[in-house]
Amino acid sequence: MAHYERDGQIVGHGPTAREISYLATRFEHVQHVACFHVGPAPAMMLPYSSERVHLIPMPFAGGDSLAAKVGVLRVAALYIRTILSELRALDPDNDVVHVRCAAPISLIAIMLLAFVRSPRKRWVKYAGNWQPGYFDSSGYAIQRWWLMRGFARAKVTVNGQWPNQPPFITAFVNPCLTREELDDAQNVSAAKPPLTPLRLIFVGQITEKKGVGRALEITRLLLDQGLDVTFDIIGDGPQRAGFEAQAAALGLQSHVCFHGWVARTSLAPLYAQSHIMLFPSDSSEGWPKVISEAMAYGVVPVASNVSSIPQYLQESGVGVTFNAYDLDAFAAAIIDYTRRPDQWQRESAQSIKAAERFSYDVYLANVTRLLELE
Image 1 (spheres, rainbow, N blue to C red):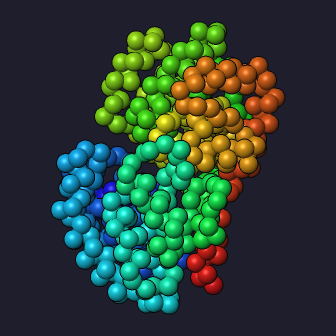
Image 2 (image 1 turned 120 degrees about the vertical axis):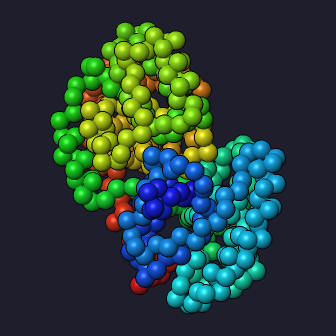
Image 3 (image 1 turned 30 degrees about the vertical axis):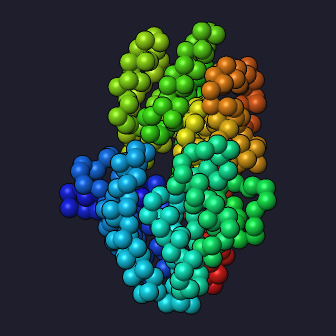
């Protein structure tokens, strides 16, 4: 989890900072060993809402290039010393160690857990795609292999249910919604606008892996079939200008709006007026929290069949998934919803109900059972 300093305050990756803040309500104190980045904080970085969380900043290392991977070796000794120091300070029976994978620092942490016996309560969360079916990263693959074999002697939670899993590996849903947010979402979405014009929405990093370019091409296909479509793209990133140029080249200027980063509190009106979340991601997703956020507002997901996305949508009885590059299938499914508005309406209502499982109340109850905190 990346951290920065903004106006004298430590801020971290928004969704994760929020989750850890809620997790901290189950503990007296949380020592968070994590990476600190030098430079301007991206807009999506937020402060912890809990004063119980204390950051132990580590220099950032890692990346896709060979030089970046070698850079991990330069800080590995510091990572090891810091993690071991924190582990030694824990009460063997009452405290908990929690590792969030996958990252270079988490790889070191789970390896160290094989050689220390304290504390007894251990929880590793693998946040990415647990069984990608392709080679995504050597670091990720090593972490999955290590955890599958139980070397960390920890309870491991993953996104989705997978075959041939040992009993210490269990499915665990990512939280993103408070009880108040669920109620507000239901209230503001009580009267969705009609499907004409059709409103699509994407929320996330503006990158090719997340499928923004493919989403623009799908929008063009829908317009070519005579649909009246608008597409709201919420998020930011260094590739944004390229996608804005692509939208112009496709003739989408009057149909697509790039909003940039939007504060969570300002997303509600955009979700409330949207019909379909378009999410053709080819990234190493676990379960994208933005999908459950959108579902709370009755937005029906049409997404890629990555990781646990097909499982959770099928369990919820909403949405459809396809290969991220099957743009015709995405377009056909969206057109089918416009031709069967009753079907879309049923799934929209079911999306609101299904979003309940992604609440922090459910999450904290699951954490309590997992770690035997009562």
